[in-house]
Amino acid sequence: MENQKTKRTVIVGGGIIGLSLAYELAKRKYDVVLLEQEGFGEKASWAGAGILPPTCRTTAIHPMEVLEAISSELHEIWADELQHLTGIDNGFRKCGGLYIARSAGEVAALMGMQFEWESRDIPFQELNAEDAKQRLAFLNSDGNGINDGIVSVPSKALWVPGESQFSNPTHIAALVSACQSLGVTLHEHAGQCQVQVCDESVAGISVGKEKIVGDQYFFTAGPWTEQLIKPLGVVLPMQPVRGQIALYKIDELSSGIGAPVINDGTRYLVPRTDGHVLAGATIEEVGFDCSTTASEVEELRGWAESLGANLNDATFVRSWAGLRPATYDGFPYLGELGHSGNAFVATGHFKGGLHLSTGTAVVLADLADGKELPVDLRPFSPARVTCHQASEIK
Picture 1 (cartoon, rainbow, N blue to C red):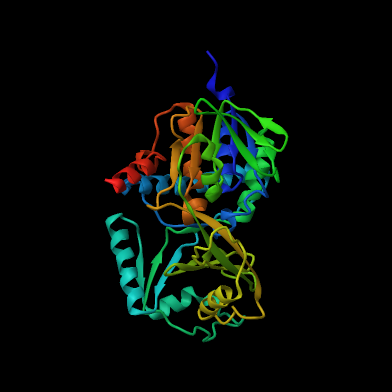
Picture 2 (tube, rainbow, N blue to C red; picture 1 turned 180 degrees about the vertical axis):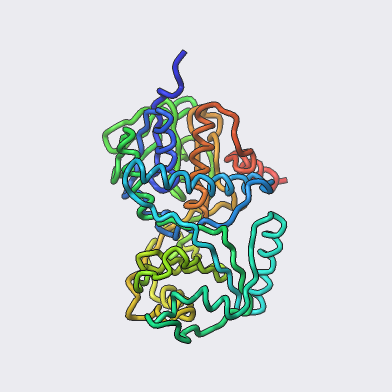
């Protein structure tokens, strides 16, 4: 009987999900080929800042909560693994998160999050205005103390010690290096991939004049997955959602590990220990347009600069955009495609791809191994789309 760990596995899509899956399967001694049409991690993986929100494994009930909690636990483990294997520090740190609200509507929304944290036993602390100002000190320090550069003092502020972060660009670099060390065959800038089908199963992937054949195939190409798998006769609707990010560079953080992620509604500031501060991110349905726009960047910068005197024209570095894959119900697609028997998908994570990448990789590797899964994949099944469409017709 063939040892399933010798199976040749082809992964199409070299973003954070594809790279993570390649890394996990390679650790399990699979023969892995990873295909990326452009550069590794250049699409959705660049449209985030590596925020790892607070979770609690013991109170996680819904499969999405379980996947989030598993992913959070794995990030710390993977950070150590990757540094040991590659020498690359991916910037993982338990920095905590400051959640602020400045309008009545924002206060109401933050109170809703507060109730959710209470129900899930996620620790948090309510801060007064002075405590919140101290948490924002790194954005307003003049080198001799704290100036009064905060334009708008929050009406409500919560401190969540369980929030962490990592640097997605260095994490991606570490995954690429680790995959190389573990023998993964990497094809970057491979060009357009086409799926060849025989009797409802994948027969191979055509890349130019080359045909790459495997025993099993995983599709992790973000919003491009929908078009990619059409030859299988599977409908997998997704919406690319553009996210634009602004980058600043201030002095290296004297407080080091103490500078928190700042969350203000759907926007965030993420300080790196080297002094870079990311401000993001917009949510725009503009198709596959990955360009930046002056108006959105200006609005994003206006918000970021209202929080700190050190964020200004002099410290602004650049902006960029990425495309995140969104599904109609907010859940990713994870599992087997149709009745192929050899094709699987992992996409549609929207803004949670960076966070959920570790858990997704382990769960799908367990699926490939035929192991009992730590997460119930039924809510994530690609087949739910067909069921949803059938109910709509009725």
